[in-house]
Length: 286
Image (tube, rainbow, N blue to C red; front, side, top):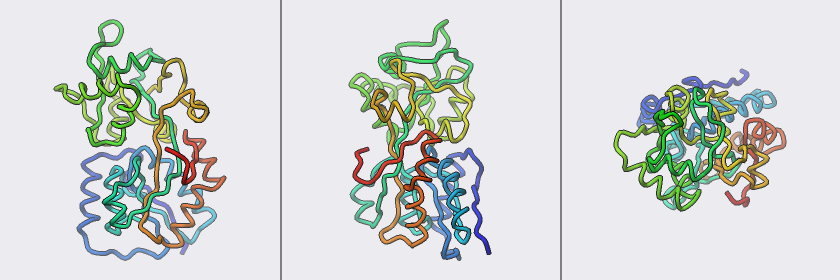
């Protein structure tokens, strides 16, 4: 019977549901899965583009089935791969030594601009990095005295090293922000995007990949006069980016290898580019 592709949980996932799904996947007994099924989950910023890639892959591989499970973050996806509950985990970070020792293997496949975004009720279209650092340090509000609702990520999130690596001022400001009381803490990429989209005065970090692939209704800002795009990221006039990885176990199945090859093919690269990502190869620096 011809394979099909499913997106379980819809475009936007929520952390509680994702955690529950991961728990079931890790503790439940083995389930019967067709030999050509590829189960995928992980970091939310990569999920919607991966769904689109899965649909394109299926058109030329009708006997294969691709399932996108609810997003569960980079670490959750890696854990599920190592437990045998996913064939591919999507990660926004490299593997650590323990994960490699347990048999996980990473394939770098895309880079996307890391961007700052605001709720569309705000008229602002751009900022300086010094201005962003002032927001994280709690030293400014929007014009007219409107309160800035800064959307933070947990200290363990893959976005935090990117933020701290932007400049010494940003590193210090992020440390201040995580110690401030009463802050909004988003536990997933989708939680962060939902908050920026729906909370008046909201400001926070996300990726161009998520913004374009999910058709989000917030505004992405220019930074220091440069509009974030694949082109400006590639020519380094916009220097801030996030790298995506596909994580598998050693010696993945032929179906998984074929899907990975498709993602890294010219057809896959064209889809990545359309949704704000530049294809990268193993050996290309993050």
